[in-house]
Length: 331
Image (cartoon, rainbow, N blue to C red; front, side, top):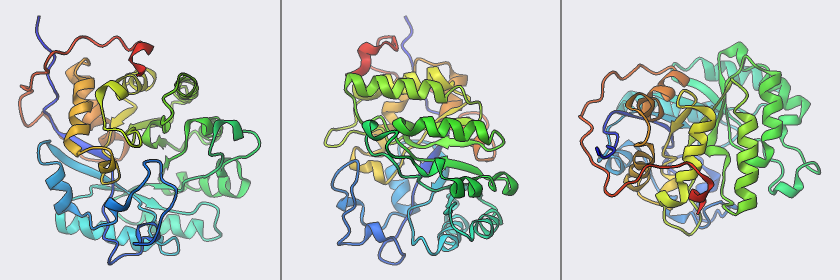
């Protein structure tokens, strides 16, 4: 029997960050800042992280293009961050697309969106909508996705040819479904797999039900990223079921792998995470793997297609049995 092979083709990292907190305004990365963070202590990432550092981390993988996602730069200077990221692209060749900052409930939102869209690399914007921090608070609290003023700003995205990157926990996806259905002309890219950090039976059941309903919206795509667990190493055994269920729900045409670096360096090295993705994805056809690792991101963020893999897929998986995708893989 032929063993599955790890993907050795080109990668588009669909979600990563660059920053230099000693020179640029990132309030949450200041030495004395300590915001609530899903991975716990994040002091180790309060440092410069630019293309030079990124390509050291990714050296064992064929990363061809990246998508820069806004980094909670000073909220009063959203254009300044985009100008900075575009400057990195001119100097280093990455990023190749930008998800910019925009506050959709502010009076200047139309002007900000127009200015962001004028940058050649901007494809999408992100404004985290906040809201309930626990499933049991749903109903008593709402996110900005249900706020009339915020939705008025959201309605402007299509006018400027922009997508929306959504970062919210799975228990808020009911509001995201309403948003997707109300504005079908705007693509939503769900960040970090809906944040399935609660791996209890109840947590996984709730996540799966919410994601299944979201997948019914044809204008939604999902990034398989940010699925590390606080205080634990990144392991295939912990994450296989999550990844396989996302692919089953959304298909390779609407799902894409991403590193969330340097944030997810709090969980594992880039090589551990991407070798994990490759190990899990080895059960899928080469065409499906090409979509998951590169082509879906290229299509979503209007990047040049990368063509054939640059290296033959020759890395053999050790002792791998076919995956079932059953709930027994949850542990």
